[in-house]
Length: 334
Image (cartoon, rainbow, N blue to C red; front, side, top):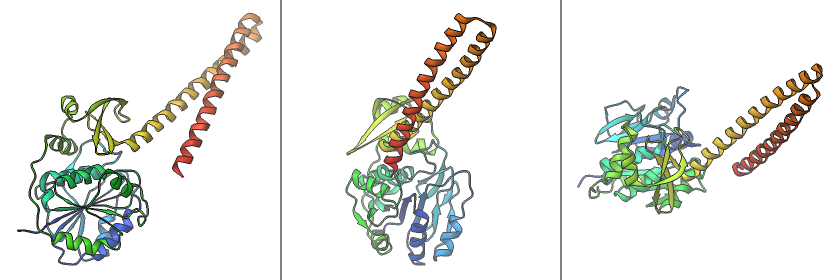
């Protein structure tokens, strides 16, 4: 029976140094293709391919659409595209952002689960928040071997902790212990292929760039009372073990933690818009009050003065609310 030949790695904050370390430890004859997703901004060019190529013996490159995957090479998800594995072909998905990122880690893991979980190993490394937890859980369910960096060893513990909250992976280890572990896991025989569910096929298809479907989402999850932070459409609540995530029919997806942060951001933006509108009303009321006074219209001036005072009181309430909100957000981030 053949050995496993796909190693999929997801990381975020602190990930460049972690990937550089791993690249330096891969042997020249590593018998698997290495697929890496790290959250990269779409607005800046990245030299991560050169960094990883210089770090070790395996050549690294940003994946291109329809590229054939080869063993002993590192493929990186490029900025603004999901990295999708389709058989032995790499695809660049233009589907909506997931967890506010593209490339996102969950689509990579789900695509590996769909095409070849029985011959794959997946790993979540350092990072904040929870991207990768859902996808790694799916890969685990379909027979992939799963590894999570020990949160105490990670530069940023959020992603490893989220993965460990979701399910019990096959291995939890330090970054230093991963090279030997990966070699051992890749040398293990392939498992038995599992029949993919229609849910998995649908979510991978959306990440590739397929159109979402309200009827499909009704089948996958329950309609929630929350609106999508990206497109403002209805979101569906999807339960996976102890973790809840959200997806709209357009395809935007969020973990519950990221959804909470997005709603906080929307609320902060709404409070700011309300304060701006009140400040404009105050400026106009003051001007009309002064004009009425200059014209000797005492009754009209009193009316505008009352409106001015009401607007100033309402604006002060919003300013106090924004200060409390920012204070709570600052404490939560610490």
